Length: 146
Image (cartoon, rainbow, N blue to C red; front, side):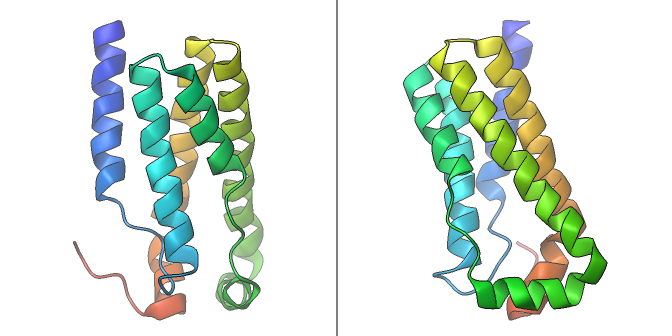
């Protein structure tokens, strides 16, 4: 079971390392997304090495990430219209799960932290699948294949 879990985490880390942020100019949403990616990788690394302090600190950074600048929120909201609530729900889900991961890490509960981490990543990937290209197009043109 531990080997299977390790394989899953390594796979996830590799995928996360290839994802770029949702977009925007370098000091805004793109930087926020890159920070979330880096902190997600750090959570995985902490879980793989049983470094609960690293897990808690990284998860806390995910939960308290900077807000998208208001001007960008307005652009995205104008494009997404009624879907904006779903877009925001992805962020809320990731936020809540990051807090749960941090709490589990503070209790050295790797099983709960791993389960919440996997659910958090599902939220990240779900949002990217549903909105990454649209948000990128709204903020700075179509996403180029990498």
